[in-house]
Length: 215
Image (cartoon, rainbow, N blue to C red; front, side):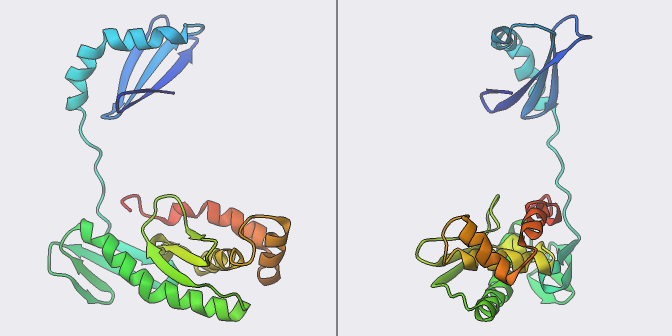
């Protein structure tokens, strides 16, 4: 896979290809199909020769549509909100009105602060593991983190996880206040609270499926 400016270029060899073929997959992605054994160093030259065609046709590709959600299923706290856009902010469970989609993330962060932080304190009391500070953020690729100073950061997307997955993430981070690594001692500590922690860890790695694509 190569990059051409802001374009992602996929290069694929095909035994049926008799010549080089360029296909536009999206406004930011193209695929170059080449015959078997085609020299990879020739691909940039092919793209350069076809640059006028690419510049002419890429703007014609429609932008992908992002479907606006109608329901926010916050499984971690057992709430399912019905979302309507275009009005003044209003919460009357299960109805939620927001002026536009950009307001959804701040709403989720506030929701997470009200619910996830108390749950973290509760789990900390149950396990006897303490932390110094906690903050809620909107992160792309990390459920949570713990610093060497005992500061825990929670992703507001945790609201969409099943309660068992949320509990695992919180215990995982609380155990990092003792072992700031993934050593055998760390996993032994996690296992004292969750004997199936390894299975739970694998489940949480796949839990991004619960997160809406717009978030």
